Image (cartoon, rainbow, N blue to C red):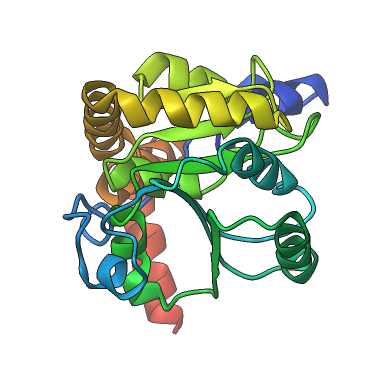
Length: 249
């Protein structure tokens, strides 16, 4: 089982027979992460309700290249209505916070990793989410946060290489904007564009939510696994395998 067509291509290049490969993506719990009001308790508690919030939530590590967020924030320092929010932990968090302080960025806010129960409210509190990655590692990478953002009906700005899985998904669904990785100027410009175009933001969020419900919801993905397994060993054999497993326990 491969999670994208790009991973399938990689396996084919290594000599795996095509009949032995099924493409089934990861899933997101669309009952747990769903569209919510922005002015929720989390947003009010952290002063987010009155700001245009560009959110990064997840691992604050090397592969994300989160310095690009600081670069964009530096370009938009005079826009007091825009806030860059970084939520999470990771090996680069302390150095990133020190960098933001050294630059004197008042439009960047750091929050620690939040309890899982707060995840829907965290995404709902933003106006646009960020998916930054470094050059050269984005081809087959589909960060799980991509599906969570779409499930929350929020648009995203993805810093990914052209032709990558995320770039293809974004173009096909119309759920976000893709820019060159590690480009602070492009990120700042994309944030400003989505800030001024409310209609586009809403349309992207709706398109993303509709798409995950059809293709990345738990029920859709587990149904694909069942179909693939039944095709592999046959309905009767699958039932027998389940009975044998139970009896052996």
